[in-house]
Amino acid sequence: MEETLAVRKLDRLGVVLVIAGVLATALLPFIYVKANRIASGKPMLLTQLLDQPAAIILTLLLVATAFAALFLQNAVLRLAIGTLALAALIAAIGFAATAFTPPNSNAARMTPGGSFWILLGVVGLIISDALVKIRLTPWMRVGALIAYSALLAVCLTSGLLDSLSIMKEFATRSAQFWTEAKSHLLLAFGSLAIAIVIGLPLGIFCFWVPKLRSAVLQGLSLIQTIPSLALFGILMLPLGYIAAHVPLAAELGIRGIGTAPALIALVLYSLLPIVANTVVGLEGVDPSVRDAAAGMGLTRRQILTGIDLPLALPVIVTGIRIVLVQAIGLVTIAALIGGGGFGIFIFQGIGQTAMDLVMLGAVPTVFFAFSSAVILDAVIDSIRGSTA
Image (cartoon, rainbow, N blue to C red; front, top):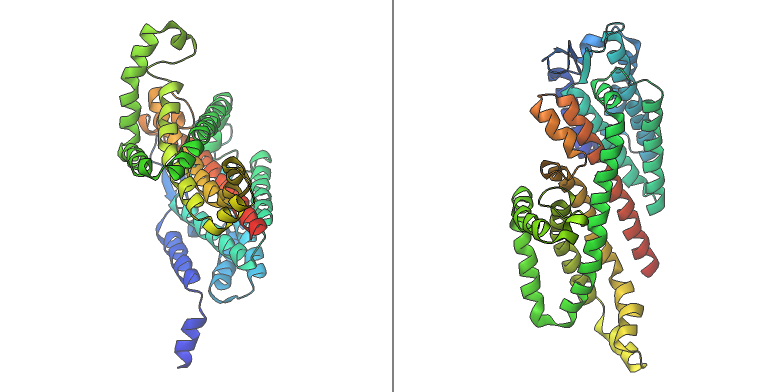
């Protein structure tokens, strides 16, 4: 009986995360020491780095984090220990990379191994779990995101991580990186803005005319079934024809390849979540509220803008959140047709068998998608709190 109670006291999520962290530390390399960017490199486990003070501190903090995840009920203390482990993890990989890099060598590459990425995910989940249990307000969650982003920025700007391979790839492509970052965000947010302008009225129209609702939603669902790369290819032919026969279109930048087909494809993919969530949100408004407003003499437009849309807004913003996260990820595919964005680095890295270059495109994409999701979740919770 006592053994059963003891098992119940263990945090189940903590058990899974600790097992994953222990297996990753024991079986996967913490860092690869490479002679150049395409060499396979020498794998080094974390236990092989224990002659370095940073690795010893990291190991102690990981053990403390494991005990906190398994047994500690105080979420604030778990958050503090997890944050220290996160800082130690980033510092350890930076110091290890610096220690293994030969002096004055530009060719050597120090690549984080599988155990680093898994430990980063495990510690990140422990921190996220602690933040959830603390029950932060929506904007305090955004504040936490800013704080952890600031911690990362300090590590990046301090030079601590300059010996890592991904930072060396960034150093040789910094101008191109910011150009592609601008293209990536413009495509993602531009397609979102166009999709809202088209999808919101279309969703309202589908709500008002139920006979058209099924046909519109099925048509948009059909577009979602087309693979992204295939849709980019399908759009190349008609846009190329338009560019060849309509001079104004060519002057506006509409071509078979480039930004135009990427933007149109992203807008098409974005319409279903916005239209469907608009319809669902409007259907969720209590009809008696709408009837009472009509009885008070409000017009259809006044009921829509003053009652329907404010009450349906949390559901509509949920659709926008889905679209934005999806668009940030899909823009990487647009690089294949000249759309630009972080996908340029990913596909160049795959072609050159340079995983560090792949990570240069993948890591900021994940960061922007995650940050967008956290911020829009806070917006949704704030709206729900204000309308409750």
